[in-house]
Image: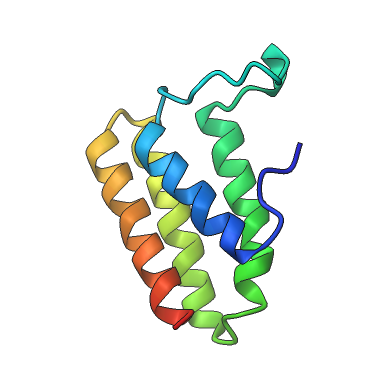
Amino acid sequence: MAWIKNFEGLVDFLSLVIVHAPDGFPKEDYLRDDEQLTLEKAFDELRQGMQFVAKRVPDDALLNQLRRYLEDAFASYKQGNDVKGAHLLQDFERMLLEVNR
């Protein structure tokens, strides 16, 4: 199931991940157990959502920086550093919103 269908959906989904990562994602009653969000599924979805960012950000260096923030946040969560992961996602979100003004 695709959670992100456009740039605005990416921003909305990112807010959900910031609030609930790494392991507090709400259980959705309309999803099977194997469809429920996990940290890995959420970040896979964010990675897929980068296609919508690429359409709005012509600067390859900035796109690569955004991807690094995303991967660094994921790594931080996996290493148990939830605060750092959340801060990196917030920085990622701030950069997304700045380039979309």
